[in-house]
Image (cartoon, rainbow, N blue to C red; front, side, top):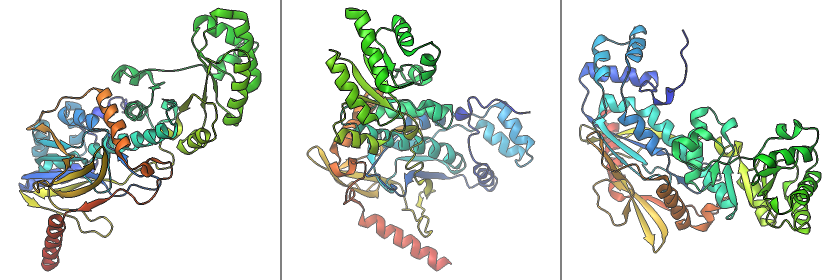
Length: 451
């Protein structure tokens, strides 16, 4: 019988089958020593000069709450793939290990670990799917939202993406990520409640269409919500602006409408005409919001052209990151039983051992990173910080405003060319320490000899 999908994002069963089959083999053969796994991405992708690290809190909530329910264990047993011994092991499985991570909102680059988990190998193996899922999506959307906010040049940006997101969980966490990146609010009420985000909204074309004419619709809506934003493009945008002006004349000093919104057409040209009309009517305080198919490139063009737009509502392009819908995130074993491990596959090679990212600064500007061994003790800021020890948090969940300020400060510290809709060259300098390169070569040489 099909069961409801609600709560799937919180289930300890959110993993791929092969993680479970590998874990069973590990347990059966006694391969249960301590392992380190790290999460990183291999390539920035086109039109990205940086990535903001996101999803840590989502990952930690799931990890620290890991517990398979009776129903989930019964389901696994029904597959006739898993032994009673392994199911008993799963029933008792809890996270008792360590986590080091880059704080959310930090700018990160190719091959830099965002998170490291240390735990017994079978348990650590089970975590791969959810760790990538959480960090990948929220980093992706946070970065997209930051690019949109930067393109807006100080004008308001709000998240309108809930209806086009790939599921309820995606929509809700996209709202959180976009707030951290600098958006002013979201239309998503669940995200507003869950994360304490400002909620925003105007009206739909259906409201206007429900009345015999546009002016009546405006008049009625404003009677309920005097400080609202009126959507003016249901029939004819400039005619809609004229109806707003007529309503202002009717209401006089009682007219307190905050803004109009244009959702279609050549929004830059229409905004310019609307601004002229509103100003001529003495409505200089009424702002102009635009929406409809916007991305960072379109917004940057509107801003560069001097379009008199006060804010942007962005939906689909933000929540699905349309121009770059995925990043090449990976979760790889880097140590087992105290010994470094690596992968030598062409195009997918990894660096061995637990690592640290050492960031160099010149005043308030970041100048370059070095990926080195966690114990190298290099100069510079160490990006990965302890967050969990022996299954308990050692750093409390920080307020979202703190994370938001970090994301702002990190972007301000980047070379300006990396924040453009089409980032300039050269890219941000990231090097690998000589010690780490030598260790990788030593291990690869050893594996060649064994082969």
